Amino acid sequence: MILVPPIEPMLAKPLGHTLPSGEGVAFEPKWDGFRCLVFRRADDVVLQGRGRSRDGELVDLAYAFPELVETVLAQVPAGTVLDGEIVAERSGRLDFGTLSSRLRPRSEAGGPNIARLARTAPASLLLFDVLENDGVTFLDEPYQERHARLASLAAPWSPPLRLTPTTTDPAVALSWFTGFESAGVDGLIVKPLADPYRPGVRAQGKVKHQRTADVVLAGWRPHVRPGPDGAPMVGSLLLGLYDEAGRLHHVGAASAFSAARRAELAVELEPLTAADAAPHPWRDADPATVSVPGEASRWKKEQPWIALRPERVLEVTYEQMEGPRFRHLAGFLRWRPDRDPASCRFDQLEVPPASDIADLLAGS
Image (tube, rainbow, N blue to C red; front, side):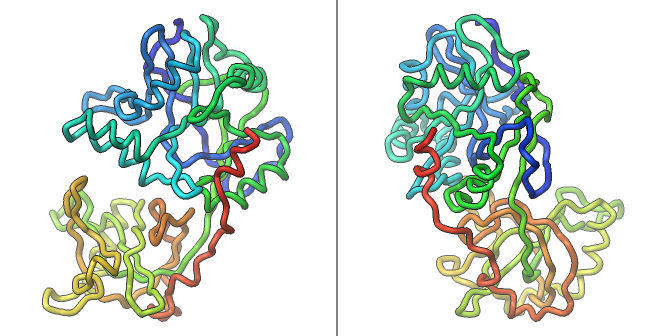
C-alpha cells in the first residue's frame, strides 16, 4: 500500500439550510454515524475513525466492529483505501444511540461483549469514496472519476457493505433531504465533481435541517471554568417542553456563549434560582416517566446543574429530534417574554414524514 494511516478525511463546511443549484456538484445523503477511513491491508483492516486517544492518535475502530472487518477482508481487495460511514439500523432508521453502544465494551471485559453486540446490534458500512486501489492512489483525481472507480469496485459487494447513493439532480437530492429525515438522514453532502480529495480540508459542503422552537428554561449547568472572580459562569441552558399531561421534560441544552455572556447570564438568572426545598418539575420527577437532566449512567458521571423556576421562555434553533430530545445542542436565538411557559409543548415541533432507510439504500 502507498497510503497508510493516519490520514485526515476530507471534511465539509456548512452551506446553510437550502440546497445549492446543483450545477457541477453531486449530492449524497449525510449519514448519522461514525466517519471512517477503511484501510484494507494485506492481512488486516484498519477502520480509522475521527476520535482521538488520550495521546492524540486517531482511533482504530476495528476492535469494536469485527463483523465489518470480516466483511472487508472478504469483499475488498488488499491495497484499497475507502472513505465512508459506519451506521447502525434499527426498525427502519439509522440509530446513533445503538451505534454508540458498540464502542462501550472498550472499558469492559472486551471480547465477549464486543462479539455479543456484533450479533445483536450489527453495523453497516456505507462507502462514498476511494482513495487507493491496487497500489494506485486517486487523491488528485476529480471526484467524478473517483466515484466511477468506486462504483466499479462496489459491483460485487453485499451487505453490510453498501455504496452510498449519489445524484447530480437537485430534485432527487431534495427528496432525500425532505423525505428521509425520520430514517436518520442528517442532511446532504455537496461534492464538486471536478475536485480532488483534500485530506483534512473542508472542501465539500453540507446542508442540514434547521428549525426553531419555543422552550422553557428550567436550569443551567456551570461552565468548566469559573469567571475571573471565581464565581460560576453559565456553561449551558437546560431546556424543557411540556407533554399533554402537563409534565415538563428535559429536551436538551443551548450553549456556545462568549465568556462575557456566560458571566452575564449567571447574574441575570440568579433571581430565578429555585430554593433547595422548593418544588421543581425535574427534582421531584420520576425519571422513569419524565426526562430529567444530570442523570448518571454506567457510561457517564452525574452532571451537576442549578434548578431555576420554569418561568422564562426562549426561542432556539435545532436540527432534529432524537426521540424526545434535541439531537445536538440547540442555538439560542432570543428571549420570548410574550410566551407563557405552559404553552411550550411538544406539539409545536415539526414531525418529518415516516420513512424507511431501506427505501433510500435500495437503489445504491
